[in-house]
Length: 128
Image: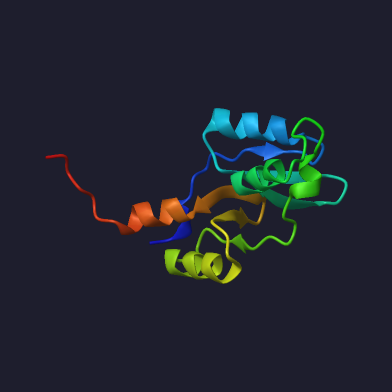
C-alpha cells in the first residue's frame, strides 16, 4: 500500500504569525493533529503539531502571544505519495515524529500519520 492510499487530504495550512491559540483552535475545529506552516517570505513549509503546542504551553508560554513561527519544525522530512507505508513508517521511526507532510510537484497534497498507517495495516474487524 502507498502513502497516497493512507494519507488524509485535509490539510490545515497556517502562517507563521498565527498564535498558538489560533493554531490550536483551527486544529481542533478540523480535527487534525498537525498543520502545515507556510512561510511565503522564507519560501518554504514547516509543520506544527499538537505536541509542539502542548510543549509550549507546558513550559509556560502564553498561547495568545507565542507565534507558530517560534515552534514550527522547519527541518521537515517530506513523503512522496508514491512511498510505501513501510518507507513512511521507517522515516517516522528514524526521525522520532508521528506526521509526514506529503508533497508532489505542486506542493503539499496530504499528511500521513502513524494512526493512518496503523489503520491501513490492521485487519478490518466487524462488529459482533
